[in-house]
Length: 174
Image 1 (cartoon, helix red, strand yellow):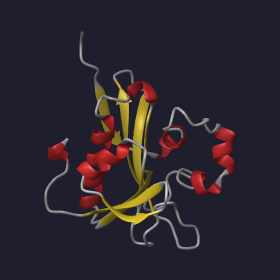
Image 2 (image 1 turned 180 degrees about the vertical axis):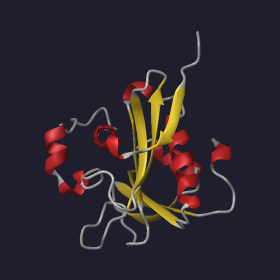
Image 3 (image 1 turned 90 degrees about the vertical axis):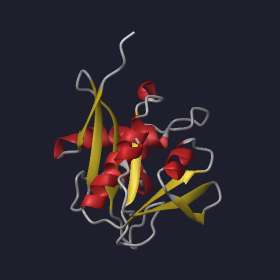
Image 4 (image 1 turned 135 degrees about the horizontal axis):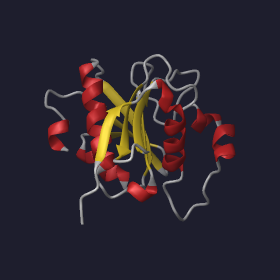
């Protein structure tokens, strides 16, 4: 059996649909919970603002595609304001990480590949800190801890985590 081949690249303006689709996968991570529909997600400003108008000034993202050029995952950073905060909002200088991987492509290390590449791109842009919000039961929490994110706020069923820029390259850990 041949290994599955994937290609990573920077997210572009034309990836708006993929970013929205990956936001759906991120929101629907728990197979036991009833899945949100695209209409429900679009009607929820607390979720939809993670992808609306991709890309906005300051947005930074990475996409992973299958050997056939089909997008199967994305990770992106977006800045939020105190007037329109995100779940993982820390301050207006700290972008929040969002990530989604198609359920059929999970288990291939794509989440790690997306995050390490995105954090390396953030480092090269001079970004000092990145936040995220994750439900405590989500297995992705272990990935974030492995990448150096630390819990800075407990929100009940979820936590806000923070990554601080370091001198070493994250891509070498992937």
